[in-house]
Length: 124
Image (cartoon, rainbow, N blue to C red; front, side):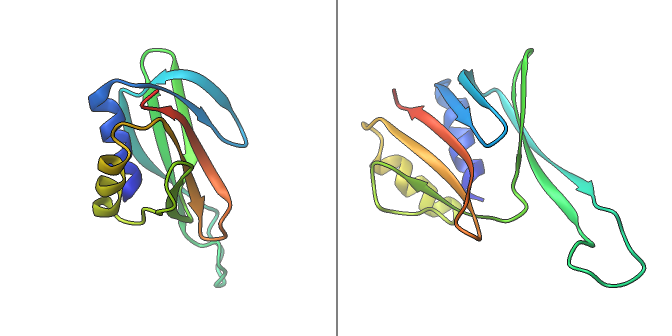
């Protein structure tokens, strides 16, 4: 997923960013680690659309910050500095290279084009 490419870039460059979602707004986070965790949903004996595990992205800045983003319906990453969307790791690498000398923000969207997570002040 392109988010992995972007998070690895932020870890390697040790850039402090601001992470924001509908649940939190945390400035000056230097991401040190991330991982995925599936959380089982309630299973029913009859078929429904809810019989699956939800996938959550966990972002860590040790020892104090642990943020979670629901990536269950992740679709693409958009940017404010270019019109391109990243839906694959290769597209994300191209965007990072294109934005190398530019301050920008990244926005993770779900399949309904709703923002899941905002990453502000990249290359600040």
